[in-house]
Amino acid sequence: MLLTGVALSVYFFAQVFQQAEDRARGYRTLVATHGPRAVVLATRLCLGFAFSGVVTLSILGWLPLVCALVLPGWLWLDRWLGAHRPRFSERDVRVYVLSLLCLGAQLMLLALADFCLDPDTIEVAGQGTRCRW
Image 1 (tube, helix red, strand yellow):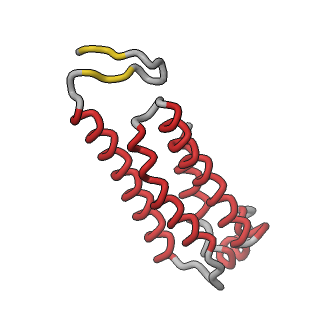
Image 2 (cartoon, rainbow, N blue to C red; image 1 turned 45 degrees about the horizontal axis):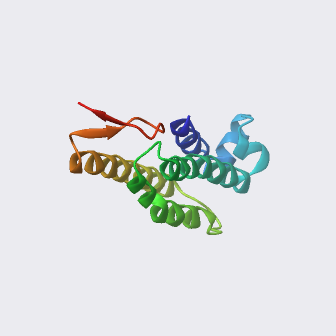
Image 3 (cartoon, rainbow, N blue to C red; image 1 turned 120 degrees about the horizontal axis):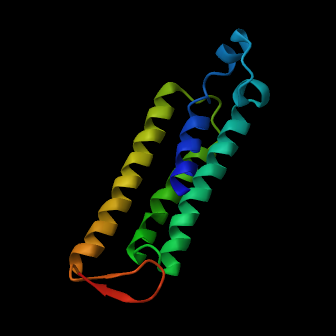
């Protein structure tokens, strides 16, 4: 479900620079009907849902607690999106997707490192019990 939030944020942000083109073609995309600000807001909401879910699940113990360390990267990306620019470009979409890929890789590496530090036992997700391999 959290990955769906990330995927939707990419879907919305990919439209941000296409307002004139979509209107000229008669498309009824979010950017054509409501403009780039609405697209950036939808992007931030989807991204916020996904990353706040990761942090919440880390705090609750369903994910390794070290996964909450992606919070600074998420906050930086959110501030970058929130910066009021006159226009976003195709390059901005590439930067956004690359930033998401880096945050995802960081998240996976943190989870892997947590597991590798204690390879003999893992916690059963959210149950508070330990399981031996």
